[in-house]
Image (cartoon, rainbow, N blue to C red; front, side):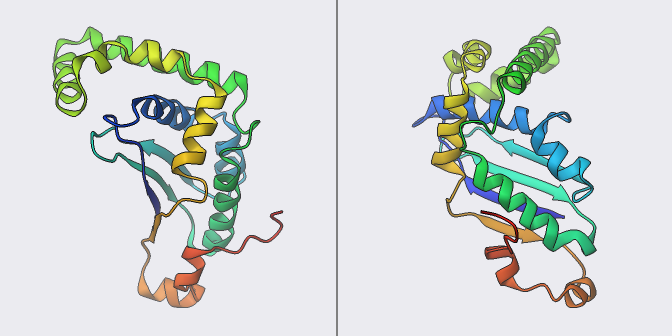
Length: 192
């Protein structure tokens, strides 16, 4: 298991970035996205997901994935190449963006149809932000552009301090000769 975390936007200080964060995560988590194709479909990663958790102070941005131990160093290098491109103008396509926004609108509408789901959702947003944020969520998500996603990634992820953790057995760590430097600055062979 591999986990990377950054300090993300505060809903109280940068609400616009919180919408971009959710859309960005949705784009990358789509099984047809370039991110998933290059990392999971290529066989480097068994699974990898991106999440932003909206909070009023600092919401964490997390990339969490599973990788076979013998592929760990190559998988980390490939992920590092992806992260370095998160703020490239063409990293997210218009098609990926449209799909993510439509999917979020449908899932939000579905969640609001169940009273139990809606009460929990309202309670969460009331405690984290306010009801206006909740009521405008779907429209604000739909208004996100590729430039908004690029701005979010450049402000909170690309080149920003982060924590990286790898969970594996001591025997596997020794067999791989994994060092702290492999997690701080993974090998970027082939990257330009």
